[in-house]
Image (cartoon, rainbow, N blue to C red; front, side, top):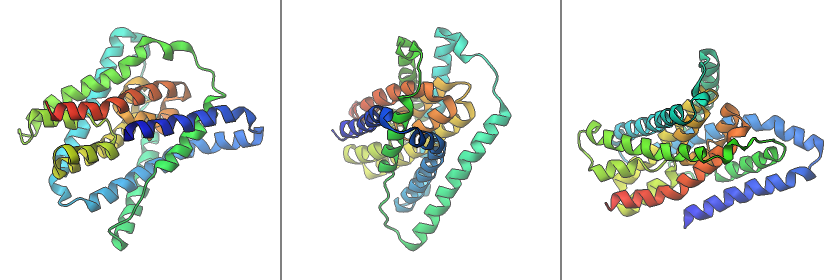
Length: 300
């Protein structure tokens, strides 16, 4: 029920911005368009800050960091390459071209600078207090509201209405399931197969997966799920900034459920505004499926 409530908030913020946009003056619109690119870096810093706080509040984080990192890497890259492979079959033209190393390094340097600022700020804060309430949700809703304003002045082609848009979330699911099977063997069978498959179904939505795993299984698996999806979000951001401009759909697929909220800023910046509907659709479907799939695999 909570997931539906959060999704409704996102679409209300987007719709409010979209329908308010024509009533705004030219000066206000220009100001919004000018500040939008900087929001992605603010959100990146907030993600890193939340990661630092999460690590500080988890007992014995060193024990659960290795599996969390492995699961995050395999699911993110699994989703990316599954989607890339699918589009080489169904739409070869969309995956042709070369990658600019110079552009990729420039983008990732800015992203890691923002992440570094968030980690540093988090480390300083945790030295003074062990309990701090921080929630970037309202900052995120403000960003989505501004995205809605920009969308009102963006002319889209009709490619995003094609059935092929469903390849993006489907590839995320298939790639994550393949990663779950691989992780069962990579982690030396410390987890059951249904546990590794379930841990692969968070799609970066750490606030949901951490709570759900704790309630349905154990606090230990809840901690792993929380860190897995935090790291999965960061890996997706890395792929977005390095590959997003050349392979936008696979990058969106790697972002999972977060392509509808946190990484939407990176989709807009790295892939282009035209791919925002792709990201919203994929993120919406995966957000609806994530809690259902986790419950299904844990009880399988």
